[in-house]
Image (tube, rainbow, N blue to C red):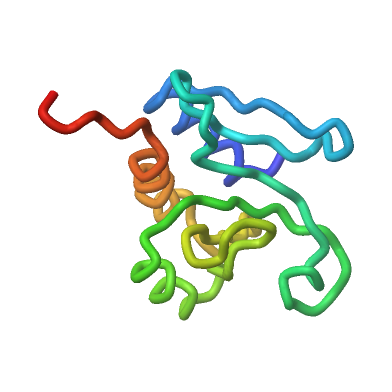
Length: 126
């Protein structure tokens, strides 16, 4: 398994008590991290051909999609390793290359943000 992916999964397990599941029978290498109460996704791991991401080459690359503040997402996409979300709403999600371009330590805060943005909203006044 990809070392950066392993670190992120370990972080999610330690921080959020989340283990990945593979909801797609046609794509067994894809996995998601979900909230335990609502089952909403806060992270999606995939391996896709580089050319599907607008990059050169057809070899597969591991990626992570996280929900992200649109303003921050736009800024991050100016840096190597951050791309418009693949197969998700591009304004609210961000794709991160897990090929070593971005260190795991720089991904953890984005995973935290995604977790917060996707968690169950509390009712007002309670």
